[in-house]
Length: 496
Ligand code: NAP
Image (cartoon, rainbow, N blue to C red; front, side):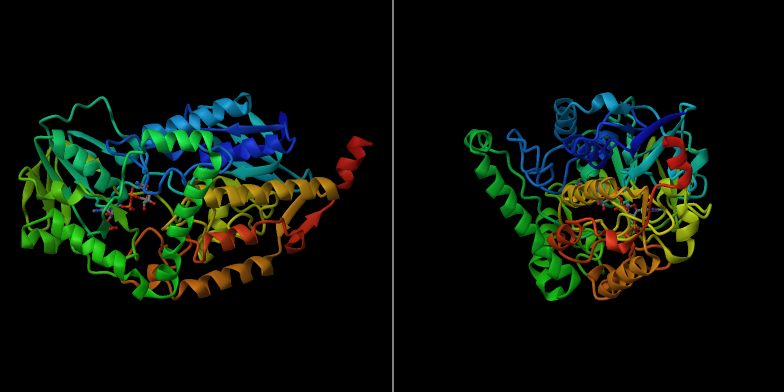
């Protein structure tokens, strides 16, 4: 059985960033396990037409690897994926990555003070620390619609796009009107013969202030790093202004609401269609989407927005609750991801023999500082419970967590701790505070259902404070909040 000091799950922004920072801190004994065949995570998986980031790339990138060559303020997916690949290549960590391999099960062995990790290639690896960067939006959620398995045409999820299918001239249906769908719909509208868009809940969509960077700007970013830093900082603070609007004072969201209403008016002339796309919940309750092309696409003659619920799917059609049957060749399900019951949680077994999912079954997802969980020694989750954002760059949150984890490893090494595990009461106090803050947020009070909330209505996904507060709270590994274990007598005996 192989032993590595640190095992990292996932090679997206989180896993790659962890590998780079471990290496920078002199750690060489680590392995990164990635189920797909490349780095990139969500940016490797989401290749649907129109895929792009809603956060400007100057901010949605590693602080330690600025890219002067972004073509647009909101970069398209291929450019982000190429950036991640380049950073991975240049960092020299890739020889410690094992691709096309999934973590099947990870079990904490308390006497040995290691995680025993079974991999899909049939091998088992033991490790002192297990860092999960497996992603908050990585497991597609398929709609449970009567008859969908019997559909004779092609059907695929937005995050599993089938590029072998030529959609030109076809009858296509898109189910869902979230962030993925509103990027897909305008692209499909360009080529397909007919497009039906099945909307269960209308989203608020504000204009996308996108533009190409000029040659001069790129030159400045390349040769005057301070310029790019100032640019990044300005975007950061601009985004942070959303926090009070979401968490404390809804009146501050008024400018966004005006923009969204004007976007509808600009993109759609038909009053009935305008009414159909106007949400009935407070802006911000669901993620605010950005697009200049979504509404004009819906207004096109060969595109139909269907607001009646789907009752069933037959071999070649979608049937709505009003009995109308719309024939379709290709069905795109843009129905989101499993967010409140992360798949990795079913595979990780803690100190008392229970999985993370079993531990969370009653409480919902909870962790300490979104990173560590009582009962799961030396498990560090990146993008864990309540670390998601509705307004800014997840890379900022990811880097905050990586700093915390690297400091935890340093602290353990210095003190000779073989394991650390947050005190139960500290974790509970952290979550009580989070949930108290959550009560006044638009996500919990804005009158909508969203992937932010779990089945009990608890918001276990979003961070309800400023991102700089998160950065500050995770700036140092607070070992005093943890139960620590010194090396066990068994280990001492072995090494003696
Ligand atoms: P999503 O926001 O969860 O949207 C899923 C859509 O599918 C919703 O409109 C939902 O309707 C609908 N839906 C789900 N099940 C359905 C069913 N059984 N019947 C009919 N409709 C159904 O998923 P997403 O669009 O993939 O986006 C997920 C997250 O990924 C985003 O919030 C964002 O954080 C991230 N993302 C970011 C970008 C970007 O940066 N540009 C792009 C894509 C995704 P209801 O609203 O009624 O539930």
